[in-house]
Length: 345
Image (tube, rainbow, N blue to C red; front, side):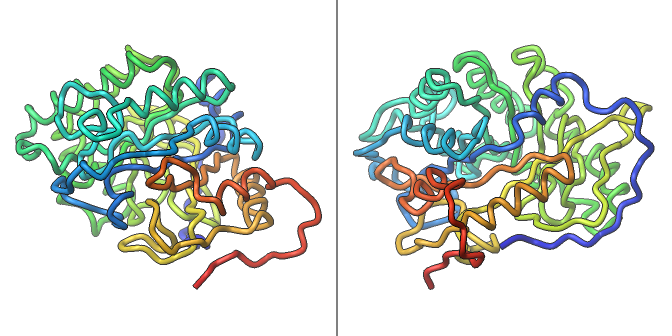
C-alpha cells in the first residue's frame, strides 16, 4: 500500500533546522488517526451534510481501548476526526446543530477521547475539515471564515492541550493554479485560497490559543508535501517512497524548516476517491497492513526525519476495527514471518 512519489526536489541548504515546538513534535514520530463520523454509519467515505444523525448510537464506545492500543504500538499522539467535509461535528459545538449531541448517543465524543488521552499519556491532535457541507453560507467567505474561527476557538480552548491541527478541505476555495508547478501553486494559494479562508488570521488565532500546536494544511495528492502557508509542517497521504524531500521553504522573506507528516490507511481496500484504503469504517472490510509493512513505513519516515500516522477507522459501535486493534497491540511481537499485507478480498 502507498503512493510512490518520484518527483525530485532540489534540497535546500541546511539553515536553522526545526524550531523547539517542531522538534518536540518530531520526537513523537508515530501516531494514530482515529476516523469516525456520520459516514461511519452509512458505509460512505464522503457525504453532503444530509445524512440523518438518528443512527449514531455508539453502543459500546471505549476511547480508553483506542488509546491503549495506540500506546501498545509505541504511538505518542493521535489525531481525532472532529469534523469531515459533511459538517458533522464530534464535539459539543454551539455553532452547528449537526453534531453528536443531537444524536441518540448525545455525548461529547471528543471530550471522552481527550480524557482518555490525558489520563493515559497520549497526546491529542485534531483533524478538522475547513469545508462544511451542512451550513448554507459556505460560499460567503467572511461569514464562513468567522464560523470556522468560532468552531476552532471551541476546540482550542475547551479540551486541554492540542498538539496538532490537521486542516483538510482547503481546496474548496482554491479554483486556480492546479496545473502549475509546485512553487507557482503556492503563490496561487496565497492569492486565492489563503485569502478567502483568512488563513493568516486563523493561524494567528490558533497560536494565541495553543502556542505549541503544530498546524498542517493538506495540499491534496496533486501537490504532496507542498506547504499551504502558513503552516508548521507538511502533509502526505499514503506515501511510501520519495527521492528527495524538501525541508526548507521560503516564507516571509526567509527559509523556514517544515517537517513532513505521512498518513497511511491501515485498510487495504480501494475506496471511493481514496486509493488504497478506506478512511471510514465499511462493512466487510477486514483488510489491514501486516506489522512488517508498518515497520517498513516507520523505517522510511525515520530516514526522512518525518512522522508517521496510521489511520484507524472506528466502528459504529465505537470500537477500533478488530484487525487494527490486533495489529497495534501486537505490532512488535516476534516472529514476523509474513511480509504481505492482510487483505481480505
